[in-house]
Length: 395
Image (cartoon, rainbow, N blue to C red; front, side, top):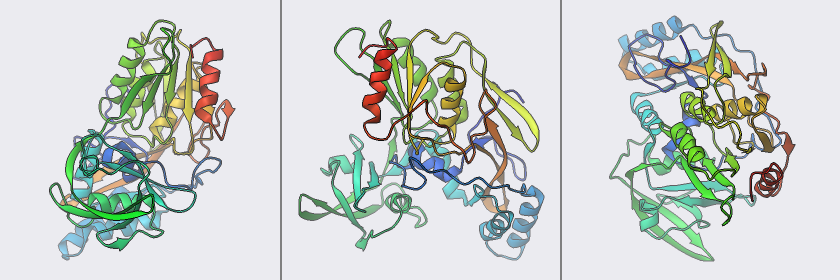
């Protein structure tokens, strides 16, 4: 199965069979691919690592047998499958019901149901609005970046993980969908108020592009929030459209992955063919290759942090090992596992770890992450811009 022909989103399903490959945990990836774009929850973060463990591959037949038995007995197929995955020790393995997986698929296509805001937890422990999507329900209600989020539907957020807050905003697990409402308790400069928002179907903006100066040769910042469908082509177009001689600052911070095929397209923007990554699936070895014809002359700096995961690490490792970019920031998350989804009776889907990928230089990313060429904590973007300028990429 060649890298060019392979699809890496959850597509083309048939009951009881292996589906297409996804790199990274489905819902962890989905959180960054459009369900609600956000900064990553601290831990693991800059300076920390995910802990790698040896996982005995889950027997797909065992899961399917447990699911079929549960269905025959009128029990929860999802619960039965989750028990098998839990016993396996597969730290990235997961089981989703039909609705959850459909939402994941939509997220990979760049759409999600929500209110159009991103959230993060501050150093003081508050959950704050980190981004408001233009034109979304939150934006129309006048919610702004920096507003504190205190309650959802009258319940205090407290110390709930940001990922859980995100799920509540979207209505995960409650059956809430487009058109349903959620009440937010907010605080701004000491003033408290509530807003009732109606969830809507929204489209994410995975790639944003802006100039870093006013000069003709000013560098171009390409921020990739997630590798949703079309993100790779957007990166390629941004590189092609950049002024001659202008460097590229590729910002992959807080990008926890998505479709690996899109990351390969993005790599092709900077490489003239050649290896992007290798990976194994239940012991069988495969490789991913860049398309020829990329821009190999333009200076490139890649900006990463502890929220750079999965497909974003694959791209970072390829550009670093191929000597195509200088990497700046803090060590990446360390998530290089390959999940393969399988359809279960009743529409549930089990995602099981079946292998790992390696960079062109043979590095195993899982549990280790990627250490940037220049490790920077504070003012990472400023340092990255300085490095890019030193490479002759403008300012």
